[in-house]
Image 1 (tube, rainbow, N blue to C red):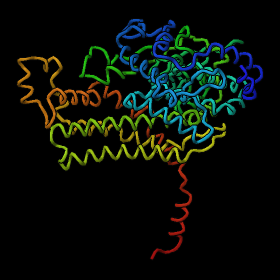
Image 2 (cartoon, helix red, strand yellow):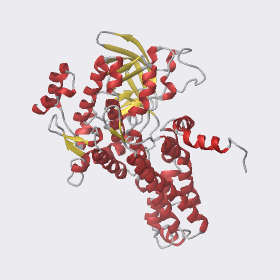
Image 3 (tube, rainbow, N blue to C red):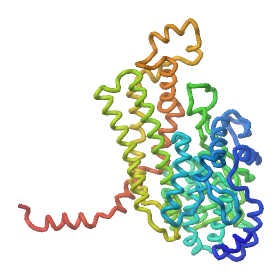
Length: 502
């Protein structure tokens, strides 16, 4: 408790006792087993018309197993020092995902942790817990601005960050409105957006729906805020930032069809483990206590805050994109070798194109880190991600197209493990379905990896998600253009044309 007393100047004096009590209950980083137990909280998850238990339903078992493995890494001798640090408040090990960096060295430590999460999951998990932890870092950084609206909001943000850090909270977010009628507004139909229907002395009551809450069934909490497309509301009841547990009464979680069901073995190595699930969230007059409310009514602050909240998280997204591209490049390269086309000029051209995307992303990461700056909130944040955001969305479809073009029909037709084990079929498979310098077993598995990544429902979902999860690419390009400093070059050109050209 001495550590808390030393740090108490950071917090509002009235929070000191509450914080001390919170530290008594703090868990620090989860083990995999503890993470599974934490999900047994009575949450209402629906899939295919039925309520399901996410810790027991087969649709979640693959991803749950991978998250267990990733959480356990934080306790391993190889990764503990690179993924966690000792909390000055509780003395527990806590994730570097929640670290509030005040130096470039601390920022680099955060990124090393992020690379571990993303490399270990092959770049397949856009909502790996490290992502939303960094949104909470952005929320904390924006605390003073929120405090100008209401001092309680600042206190709430400080307390929420500490709670998430000390309890290793995994979060989903819900920022999009239901896709009902994008030509209309919530003024025309209030059910088109989440809204506050009542304020009480204890908190607020919210009603409506939000999409697309990726990882929601396996997250502990949901953080609600609006994307820039939806931030400028015509009525204040539609502007709300808040957080609440996934087990909150009145909150229903509707999952899409799982890509991980009815698949086995080598045929779907990624879908079986990394189908992180997307969900619609229905809020049927859900109560949110005041201590979990971070902003109300002020649309301009909501618009301003969006980029501040995502300053660290979007960089994490590019770390993941880098590892996804590396995975696709490795698969494409091995496929080309397995069928003897790796030295064909047109194949090398496509492999070179894919390598260009990998290298451009790597260099963008270095540049954003080099342009790190001190925020108004007192933390070191990476440089703007707007350019890389637009770039990644622009090439998202092309990178998978390259793998499909190189693998061609082989991606469609490969023997199964049962085929490979058949004594009658085996001689034919070895004669007609082997590759160049690779046995039929390994070749078929390699091509099935490609099928999983770029051709089946899981792969197509990943491709679509890659294109859209950073927001509307047109909006991002316009924002990039409007924020880019063109004054110097425009003035030079004006000077050039000020007199007759020779």
